[in-house]
Length: 489
Image (cartoon, rainbow, N blue to C red; front, side):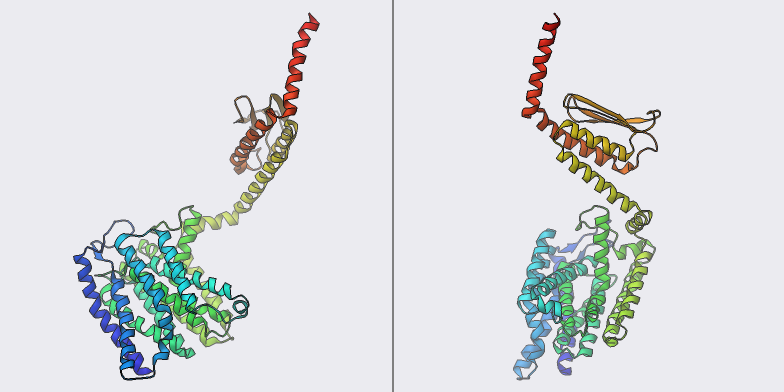
């Protein structure tokens, strides 16, 4: 087995060193290059972007060559390639999707759907999360989590691929961590699967490290993320405890954390989740004055430390797992705070000042007000709801003209030094709210309160103005008004 592993890593390094410059030359000839945009992309000249071709060819080429060699000499070593055989169709599918994106630029949803399909291919091949009671009792749950995990890992490595050598180097460190874990656990299939990837990445980094002469492209970064996700699933099958299953996650914590922070930031800013920006971890480090190379090396160190934590979980074996996870969590929180994201600082201040609870109270008050108006059957019922809520919200005075009737109430003071907000319901109907500088209890609720009032009362007016009861009242009033002058006369 040692000879097979040595052959795999030697061949993968050699093939990577041969294929990468060849692919670089062809990419330049066919204009498959990544152009600088002076915004998110920090390189200053066009760089070939299809390095994934060389990486994938070196990985699978070394595997196929060793298998052919074993077959030629009738050596019994095929059992170690079972895992590679299971994940090969899905991995090649991801590679071709990434290559299409490098050549023609696919839409985000197209790549997402393709990743889901690739994840289901892996599950159908028998590779999925399992081994603990919850997954044994609900096998479908484990398969769904497997697909979600593969999609997350695939995109995490793709998103962090923003600097020369960053994604490839982090992937190499995660692969080496997985390789060591497989040796500790005696997981032969995982060892055989990780060794050729480590060799292919070592050869590729010769050309990809700063200053890079070729980029991974989506054909490379998507494949790396997908393979690392598959390795994590294989790794988790040998974990002895549920806490130990977090070891593969910790090994990939840098790209996963970067992706999680990106999603959280864009959510807080109400921006599209897939919209690119210049606020990834490596961008933040560059903004703090670090050079390109120092930023990459610092993230290498972070990945190595994370890998050390994940291996420590294996060695702990039910003794110090909680302490290791707690230490890692505290270190991760400290690092996030050091990045000084304005979005998270603003969210923290909102939570500490109680603004979050106030917003919830406002939303609940507006919903209660809307429900009350929806249930009102007559103009008097509507006015009762408006009067009660205006008093609760602290308005000085409230007046309302609704369905040819006038309503009014003075809640506090004499209305001096107050301003008024007029809410038009229809051409003839309106609501007027008078408020002082400090009289309103929920100032943030004014806009949603007024919007809800206008919308619901407008709908109510249509129903009430043309209801049979209203038509009878109008007819009676008309007859009465027509009769009174004749009687007086």
